[in-house]
Each structure stands twice: as structure tokens, then as C-alpha cells.
Length: 100
Image 1 (cartoon, rainbow, N blue to C red):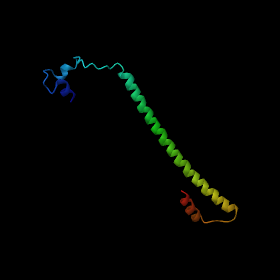
Image 2: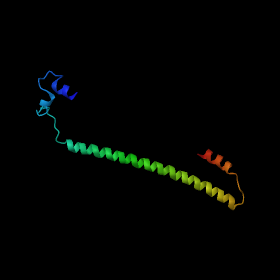
Image 3: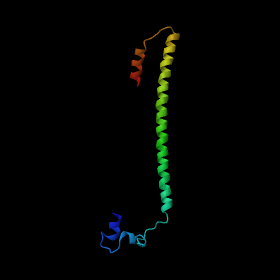
Image 4: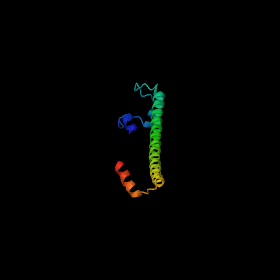
């Protein structure tokens, strides 16, 4: 593909190998190429790290909420035991699912 574009589909009597050393005079300013490449690379790394941080925080939030629900279940059960009124846990589960 590159070779066809440079040799104009074979109409130029030079091979791709011969054209490797010839300045094509395309008037392209590539002086800032490495700066732009470094900025693009930094942006990709930063976005990947941000995605990773968001993913870890989401899993931590889910884990924390899961642990919090266990704590609430245990606190209600202990309260019922302290008040000597054992309540069925199924009724509490129905109430909790209605809240969510």
C-alpha cells in the first residue's frame, strides 16, 4: 500500500527499495513528533490508570456495601436477641429487599 502510494502504482520507474534513501520533499514538519508522541503516550497511560483506579474503587464500594449489609443483618439479629424477641429473618429479608 505504501509502495503503491509512493511509486504511483508502479508508474514511477523506481522500486520501493531505491526510494528509501530519497528525500520525497513532502514539506512535512516533523520536528515536534517525539513531543507529540510523548504527550499521546502519557494520555494513554493516564487514561488506563484512571480506568484501573475507577475499577478498583467500584469493586471496593461493592465489597464495602456487601460487608455493610452483613453488619446490618447481624446488628438486627443481636438487637432481637437482646430484647428477647426473636424475629424471623425471612421477614427482615423481605423488608430489606423492598428498601433496595
